[in-house]
Image (tube, rainbow, N blue to C red; front, side, top):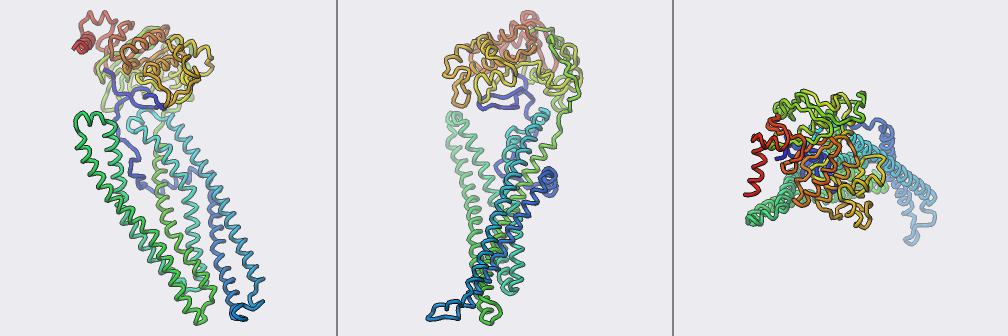
Length: 630
């Protein structure tokens, strides 16, 4: 008999959902099992990302320039090795009994070139180390800033945003998408600059050394690049099918094993097995083809590299025999072939990662660009030491414009009264509470606390006036004391102990090894009733003038219900309380019962008055006992 299903607006390690809300009405948006989708606008997303990182752009440019400089030093190396090879070649003809004559090879010059090479390669290492350090630092700072901005954005978003977006999707943006941006910026950008520099630099050095061998090296590399492109295009559809198959497999397994008892009870094992085998066979085919084709890339590139070595050696030997080139040129080209072919696969991988980053960045900036709650920093915090009088004046509301849930709700509740809101599913009970706490704005009418419209004060000021106990107890990983104090400042040990004694929880806590310092985590074994008593103690410590109890006993057994109900009765003393309950037996002592149907109050009064009136409430109340007796 609850209102609309409760939404999960925040969940602890082993707690339940937060304040109830509307049903999921919009499309779910999430990354799914298929990886990142291709960004709608690659350039626009990267422009946003560059603008977002504007303060770090000079440092990033410096790091990328350092990557290019370190690569250039590596490219120059083979040209110096060519000189060493030529020096050795010039000394080889001067042989004495098959051994080079002393002084035939200018070892001083060879040593000078070797020292220069050591300086080049050592400098390249230092520069690349500095570049990696800078990029790692900058990208982690950017990731940290992105996470902080997303966290602040979550607090500024209206709850209606979460009506059409799964919580998992929001979490994915904070974790997967931000990590993808950080990792790619750290690795792929530097790799891309280094690879392009290596490709262009080695091509220039080869052209300066010998154009004929350059054509040979480039020709063999083009064959490899064409083969790699063909394989990537062919394997892409199989990778897509593989990811889709993984999604089907995970969905099927989760569905079957999370409801294993139902499958067993209805003898659905054979049907589930056939479905599994069909999905598994399809996944095998797509996975085999994708992995086989992708596995060909490395052997093909190795073959192309080796083929390039052979071609350079054969053509180089012919040129050397005609005295068109020296032996050192062949040595240099052997290295240049490797330097030229190696970046091709790295560039392809980096380009793919940049697409992935653009897709992740698009999702992050889409979230950051969502419409926020109106800024209320200029509104005065007028709600101070309120008595607890609440008034609804012709309130009208709908979660979507085309469907009004609350049509014309009016009620006036005096301070300290216990008000129960009952009605069938979809009547608008939880919606009234959401509007009371300004989780949503009314479409018409006003809600007043002590005569002050809640719309005229900041939302935080409204929230400060309430404590609440919900259907599902929300606990986070931390000590019992931390769970009870939760965001309340200035709470003493005596305050916590007094609240726990009031709800009857103190004795149980003292039996625990660490008492109030016992950490609640996945290993902590607490009953639903004990969890609920902790949330009631939290509400007592909050000590707000208004109290909301939303189906607070619906998830516990009858015996525990009595214990929780007794604790809640103590909690309601001196507070204006709003109780939503589907067990009508728990609200018989309410000062006022509001009966809702289709967004309107159709009956109001005490339990006895409503039963005597033999109306809608009486029918609801009697039907529960008829159902129980049946």
